[in-house]
Length: 499
Image (cartoon, rainbow, N blue to C red):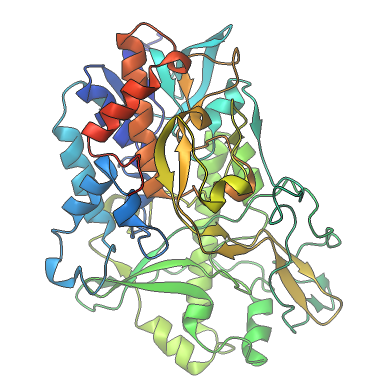
């Protein structure tokens, strides 16, 4: 017996991350019915999976955070109010979840479906007809929003997109393969050959195009509060050589403190947000993971998540227990554990991995490095970006027999720059009922200044409002009245004009 069914709504949104939630709220406020799909048991994307800051220390929040983005962070500030000044913009995943649930609960017309994984789509000519779910159900809509971090609908819908890094050019002097990190004088070889964590291929040429994207990792939450701390779980051993490179770095005193292995960002309540260390020898991001993740099926991604979780647990146990780790680092690690009050339905581990970059739409306009330098204007501006040009390392190569170095890292102070409505639109004729507010149309370099949750919140709100307006006016999203959209966003508190 086939129990599959067809669900319908005016607007269908693929993922209930911050962009998707803001899109759903914006569309519902304008009277559209919305189906908001989420593959995990909880909503909120990375905001509720360990990425616990609003990036205001790397952005220009006063000048650019408006609308639902500002509203979300304003509400979050009521938690731990005494410590908000000490930890400006930092919060807990559980608190972000409660705010997103609160904001969604205040609008009518949004149907939220959790634990519902999209696996494909049906398309007729230049329009998506329905999304296909893993459980066999179909979801029909009039307008669709791809809010996946990976840009999955671009792939399934055969819509023009890019993956990887463009070659260096006059317009993009930061593009392509980059060598911004020094050689680390630790041999990457043993008697068996290259150690794990090192690419066996020869170094690519500076500025060359590359199919590879920056790494991904869990943004773990740890605590040193004995009343809230759970022990790091025991885990089955992996390759005996797995952390040999790290052990050699300790022996050579290339690493002398824990935060040089895993980023430890203080949160209120004796918690720490953990990140891949930008210049790490080995950290939370496994090399060679990002591109296979983007190409994987949803089922394969679940297996990959489980594998990375085990690798991360082995790393934490190594840092806590292995005698090759300096005593003070082991002592520091022994004071840390998983928080009992976070991620209770996932063994206190974040639900999602941090997909910093996936596919990128190649649409009606492609933003590049020159657009990120500030001063430019667009008649269809719907938000502003302002983050650093931020790319974590991409690959790690041997540098002779006695050293290695990381490739791909970018870190440059950002400037405020406008984001045009067109950056969310596919090329004319490719898909006339799709908006893409996360995997926007940009080069790798430009995307590195956009790929932050606050920016995606603003783009999501604009996309949701545009989708609803297109239905009200019986036009495609491409033909939305942009001045009318801009005026609506301003009325909702959006910032479209620099003061």
